[in-house]
Image (cartoon, rainbow over all chains, first blue to last red; front, side, top):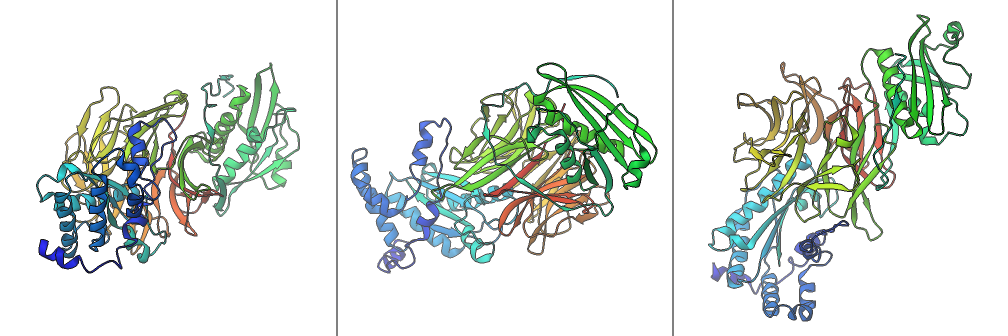
Length: 190
Length: 433
């Protein structure tokens, strides 16, 4: 597998630019009521948790964690390797294709090489069907990804699975063009 | 019927809540021959706050049902005086409502009302109620129920409540979700829960008393789906169910109001559990490795209907809670979901996929006859009115979420929409005290 990645690495960036950041942008979690401090940590990701912003916030983060700059560099390298940070699914499906498995393996290797990094997998569905069924479906998609990652021992405890069902679409249209963008699992490193 | 009763209105503080999102109602379909009925305007000087206008509330209730054409007349009539049946018959009316309001003390009013059948020349009911002004809306809805029942022989669903979620974009372009409650006429809107995280599946507890009325709902306010319980008539009270690993969603009340069923994925496996609110005991009700969700009790609490993809398709199943046996119920179509029992327990309302469209369908449990009620593209969250005559559900109109209410026969309907944003996830309360 490592050989494969070495080959992919130089084939830099055309597709990877917006895939994950546009999706992550919607992950705004804010509570107007009395939220415990734990929620603030999640809310911090709001807005522009993209790779660029991670890099920009290096100096701020350095005060808290020494490893941060290494991590950022690692994530930047992963991104530069043309790795997909969002996986897409067929209607009502949770299956991981062979090519998707190859993508997931890159993430697994990345996590093994960077033991400090944690991953949040966010499962989503398109708007068709009921909201509650889609919430369950979104979680199954994220779990499918986690299961592939989990084939590598020791990664499971560093992976969080969350489902937003159909509640956080990246595309607002009501046709297949939008739906196929919304049936997805997003990889969010933290 | 002449019982004099001091109606204690609603004593519970609602003032902690902000104004909710007011919906507009448009009647889209009425009976072919609605019953023509006149309401002689209830008159009282000094008290005419629009939302407390009893005449207007009754008129709107009856019109909205699609079964009446209502004329409001200013011909002053005393409920105790004799009614000139011929006069009203000549005007093509079948019934007349006559009422008056009289102030009895600083806070208490006496409301007298009489429903007169023009053709039989008989008084169908005559009633006198003492009421606080804060109780005017409720009394008006109760009178609508009485009139409806006296003229049609079946109970109305006016003295009931709705809950729904509205979604608006704020000035920064972020989505804001608000959980609202209102009277059945979408007036008297209250809200206390406004979040930038999604809210879904609000559902009224079966309690009849206001102080016990609760709404279970799902919110992502902590970054993942969790079930909360809101006491709208008890100030500031919102409870959260314990945190379970994975999703917690699709709450639905047991008919006794003491427990909930919900979907949990504690072990990654989405199954249905019941949660006892007093003992805090969790009981697992399904064990399948596939998705089991959207559970809802039969009115007698003996059966549980739910959605499962255990066959490889999304279909409806019923678990008999006495025998533990689970039976698949739907065989027509490749996607049937989110079923609820009718108030008589004989049929199921559900979302049914037809081609590429998701529509509301009614299934007779015994005969298995499936009747597709709607012809839209993306309908969801269907629920019955408490009398079982109407169905409320969420749909899209010009790419915007609205609520639609349709009679079971399909011949009457109205819509509830928000001027500023989307409306979704409606739920209709049961009967109130």
